[in-house]
Amino acid sequence: MKWYQNMKIRIGLNLLGASQKVNTGAASASRGFSNWLGRTFWGIDNTKLATNETIFSVISRLANTMSTLPLKLHKNYDTVLNQSADVLMNEPNENMHSFDFINKMEVDRNEHGNAYAVIMRDIRMQVEKLVPIEPTLVTPFINQDDGVLWYEFRGIGGTYYFHNMNILHFKHITGSTRWSGLSPLNILKNTLEYDKSVQEFSLSEMQKRESFTLTYGANIDKKKKEEVTDSFREFYRNNGGILFNEPGVDVEPIEKKYFASDTLQSEKITRARVANVFNVPASFLNESEGGSYSSNEQLMTQFVQMTLTPIARQYEQEFNRKLLTKEERLSGHYFKFNLGGLLRGDTAARTAYYQAAIRSGWLSQDDVRRKEDEPPVGGNASKLWVSGDLYPIDLDPKDRKSTSKVSEGNE
Image 1: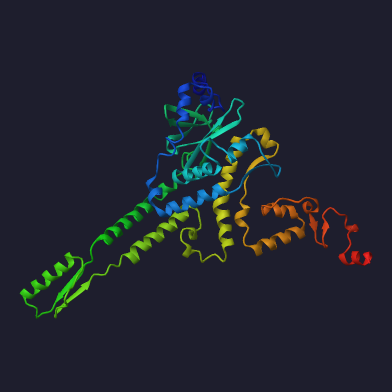
Image 2 (image 1 turned 120 degrees about the vertical axis):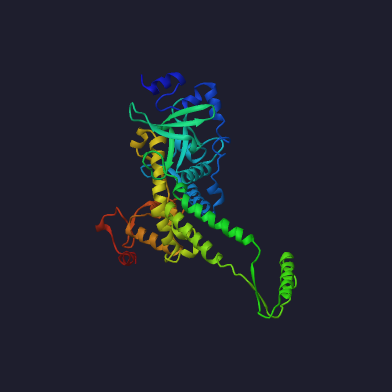
């Protein structure tokens, strides 16, 4: 008997139903899962995320952008809704809405390299809840008997095993294991430690009192030197006051030059490396470095194409595979993030784009209204037209007449 078959007998699991352990399994297991929210996943903070402004900035931008993207379930280009879509887009679990859920997933993915959520199903195997779990407590592994991917979770009350179809797993690129994503913060470990050391050194130097040099002339005797030194010590001890400029004695402050060189250079290097590792435009971390882009539209195009599209595609594939049945996928169902809103550009650019699309016959007026979040009006506005000027695209060419001929005939 294979090990997972034995586990199925002992705790009531089936190959695709790890959530059955929660819904129909032992009471102790149910209590263990009910205690997850508020106790396990929210309790661990990475000090690098909590104390490094650059890391916080880039992860916040990625998480907030993904959380605000419109997400819909489509069937052959039409928007539809089923139980899985309702759970995902409205109430993943009793403590979170969709923004919180995707935001949590994206923060975990960028902080730890991996983000996990358990798919809990009802008695009909329909999606009932999506519950995030702490990524540091999860280990993916391959069952040697049949080569199937499983996830081990060391949770409250014991260790739990989930078939891969019952775990949403979002990750960065994988290393030698193929199944666990690499943490960007581990890749940046040396950079962040160096930046932290420079900042701590700079802070300690800033907290020190100013340093001075005392220069005596050749005509100053020993007694006078002692008097000048005592006077300066008193001035320094009181952190200010009156200091007489004695003839033959020069007092010069020692200038601190490290602020403009070491600290600023370290910050610039850190921002560049963080931008490279997280694959975002450097100008997102430093506005002064955005001069290479001729427009904000060009900047957003690079951000969407190079950064967001691979991330959104991973989410879509995971949702499609694990939240939809094979029959639903074959009938044309799929989840899709709408990235078009980030590429709209300014009003002039959108107007030119829509005019060309309508007059060329590949967008209708209603299509344009949907893109601008306006309701369709139906009728001729839902038809495709070609300039001529203008005809329904399905009108026989021999029936087309120019505007001038139609006007003459009416007269």
